[in-house]
Length: 241
Image (cartoon, rainbow, N blue to C red; front, side, top):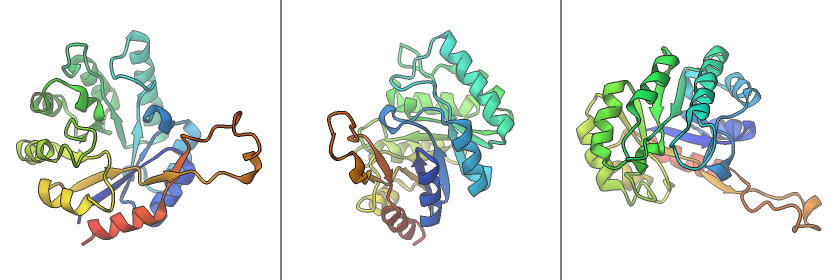
């Protein structure tokens, strides 16, 4: 069976994704920013729904690139201490350097701070200069898993690189394809790459309450999304086949 990981951005998303069949949850905040560290309340609520072993907490101080200054790095260290105290068992983060290499020193410090929590390298991986070099670096410093689109806009476009990464990784580190994965391409992606897990937000546009329809110039919902249970269920059927 293929592990189905659903990326969620709030407590309601967590409940919907789990009810529809998600095997693992990535919990973030702010879809617009591509995912940042969620609030303590959202983390605790998620832990009340399912065992912390099945939830991956995003550690990211802001949106944008993955090159962080000293103050942002301190925030990441503090966030890791905080989520660990809350009972988190898995986290996801990533720091790169301006030269396009993985920031080995800082990532290693965060992995050390995580203690016995599993650490996933997020899609900062996709902005590094050489995915195979980065795979080796990530493995050596202790990442358990890498989330990647194969350095393309979508995992389907990057499927050849993902396949090669999986072959190089062997059993030493997990490769998690993500970005643009849906019910229309998941089965082919799994078959082509040989992956054992997939990642998707399974999102759809947010259904806007009629209350705000009279003044769209003030209330802009263009970036509001929610987990789509039917999509999660369809993906679960594929990954369980």
